[in-house]
Length: 436
Image (tube, rainbow, N blue to C red):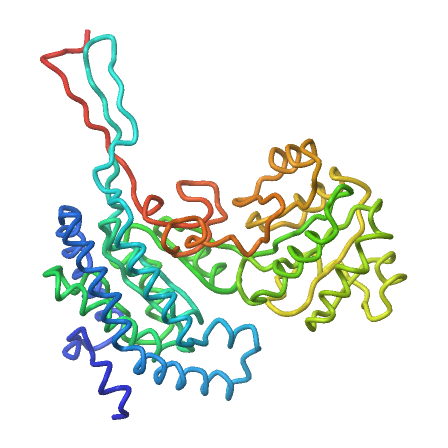
């Protein structure tokens, strides 16, 4: 065994089981039992577990970095792109942010039992709508090892058990982080099966989760590339919080402040090119091509961004290459952006409605009417005015963290935090009423 393997022991005794189907069925049974306990766990106990988990992750920082180095080395040998390596990489700063996120989630108000609405009926009945846990959540993710901490913390805070299935690319990192989460559960006296990490990278494990593990899983959350999400949506027999591609747009309107247009667009594209909130398409109003296009594009090029543009862009930017129809549909996850000139806000909206993945869009403008049209007519999960698309993040929304950005329309939409990981029930109080 390597030092990393010794530092990250097998936390689930599944050695007596023979195959993936048997292993996953047992994981499901354990998760269901843990969920039954968590549904009634006191808020203070869950909070204590999360603070202890955050402290344990911080204490294991060196081990986590060493584990991540193994994943990074394997990723480089497999020829992973710089964007994917960036998603995979952990640094002391990123571990500190992960630790802080778990502390932040711990300090959030407990959603379980919260009264969403309360009203009285003319017949004297009092009706309350109250938040309840979903039960067991299956999270299938790729590359980003921090999802282990975010998903584990958010599901615990919301009273749910979770089954985590990370990709083979982040296996060492995820195991090291998971060990810290288990330590937190142990210290607080909560069942360690509340946060389980699938111990195999066999793809058959994903198939078993999509079947629902014999009714054990209540909802699946995929977080990864288009291929993974497509498989989940095609094969899942349980509800899915869909997270499709992040084909995000920035529209520079005719009244946009130039300095703001430069700084916001640069941040939206280049802060981290591999995150789902990174801008992939830039739309520019025709009236500001002469004043805004070159400064914005030159700032992007200076940071190493490739420009793919329409005919007008090609005529003004010598290094730009022609944008094809495929480009408008593409989530690059890299230092590439497609650029198009549009006639007005209506044309920008039409383009976004046609090509968007309904994730995140931003408008840069000083015109209130343009903002109103943009916000009212575009049906994406997150819309921003004069702000970077990279704010599409649960932590930035005050959720402490997120399992992902849901782009569907049912139940959860946008950053999936503790409230989105709950359902509700109705409590009806009477004094002997009968229905005529």
